[in-house]
Image 1 (cartoon, rainbow, N blue to C red):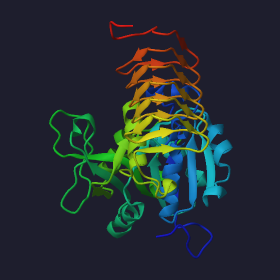
Image 2: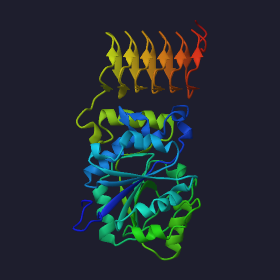
Image 3: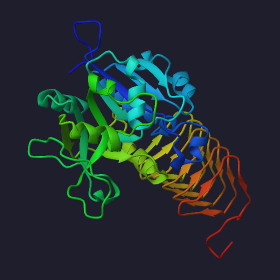
Image 4: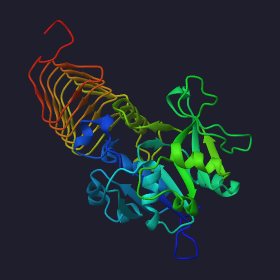
Length: 364
């Protein structure tokens, strides 16, 4: 299925909701919106845009809010990616449903494919569209199976795949199917969403459609899926992209234990494993060990430092023999030699920690 038909209007348009503040990823999102954070060396949003383009859709609307100008400054009109990109900005947060309704005036296609900009996914977009078309649904939801659905709202379906309910989080879920954050709307349904106020698709729009007897179809698969909202998930998602576990046309065939970008310097004896990414102009010192690390552009990891499952912000420095594990280090922070940062520590931008300034061990 392609996005063009014989008329002037595209057959399918994509909408990406990228208005969130990314509070769970602070301090990284103090300077950049979450979809613009480097993920396997390119902005996270680029992976999604490349999947949309690969599905034959080239007309995309971004629903922006927080730091809206960052997106247009980077992507412009989208021509470098072979896309037509337009931007619609929320002046106040409107939620998922309100955000979709807010871009309605930019929509001309009858079929609208909506993505949550927080999700790293691997499902075949064309198959979701085919399910929508073949079922004749008003709305189609991409649903994924998860091993522990208790942390999510569940979406049961009948034997034909039709959605029967939207259930809140419970300790005894009746199904392991959850909403994966990708929707196909018939355009007229979007017009019916209340305008100018916050609206949740999960709690308001979809339950009301079911109550009205409208057809909501589920497209269920076992494709790769990860909400990238937390540092842990961000690190794992980035590593999965590097190792080829999560698919992305933006990376081509570059898969392996590490991804080192141009201009980075890797000293002899440094070990890079676990899907580590080293950004442009970063420097990795001798005998440093990086396991599942996300090192942004211009960061410096000194000799003998260990960085595991952590994010090191733009221009930050990790001193010699420091241990950084399950931690987020903000842009421009300076972590002194032999410091130990563990278990969810977050260092704000520009903070300086002296040598051995924070330790979990008794030795110095």
